Image (cartoon, rainbow, N blue to C red; front, side, top):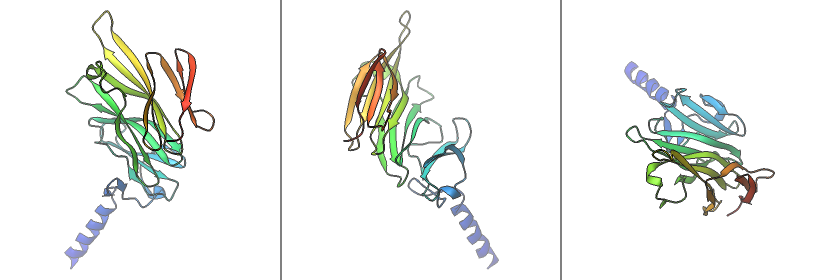
Length: 224
C-alpha cells in the first residue's frame, strides 16, 4: 500500500511540474499560477522559462490573470529556432518571428507566426518572412524580421530584410519588404525595395505606415 501511495504522489507531482498537458497547453491552470520570467506584462502576457541565453529557453503566453497558459508553437528550446520580434497586446493576439539558425549553414531565415493567447489558436503558421519565394538571391541570403505590427482583428504586417553577402567590392546588400496578412489570411506585399524603414501602426491601428527612402507611405492594415 505504501508503494502505491508513493507512486500516486509522484504521478501527481509530474502532472504539475510544468510539462505539457496537451498540444500547446501548459499545465498551469491559469496565468496567476504560472511560474516563469514575465517578459511582457499586460492584458496579454509573455513568459519565458529556462536559460537566459538562446538554448533551453521556451516562451508561453496567456490572457489576464485567469486565462489558460499556452506554449508558443514552433519551438525547440533555442537549438535552431530563435524566437523574437514579438508584437504583443493587439486584442488577444501575439505575433513573433522564428529565425531558423542551422549550425551547419551560414544562412539564417525567419518565418512569421501569430496566435490568439485566449484560445491558443494559431492564425499565422510558419509563413516565410520574405514574400518572393522565387527571388534569385534568396538561397544565399539571410532573411530577418525587423519589426511586426498587429491589430485586434488579427491582421498583421512586418518589415522583412533580405541580406545578401556578395564578394567584395560589393559586400553585403540589403533589400526590404513590407508584407501584410489580413484577418482572413489574405497575403499581400505592400512594398519591396532597398530603402524601407520605420514600420508602425499609429492611431487606432487600422493603417500600417512606413517610409520609402524617407517618404511617408501607408496602407490599410485592419480587415480581410
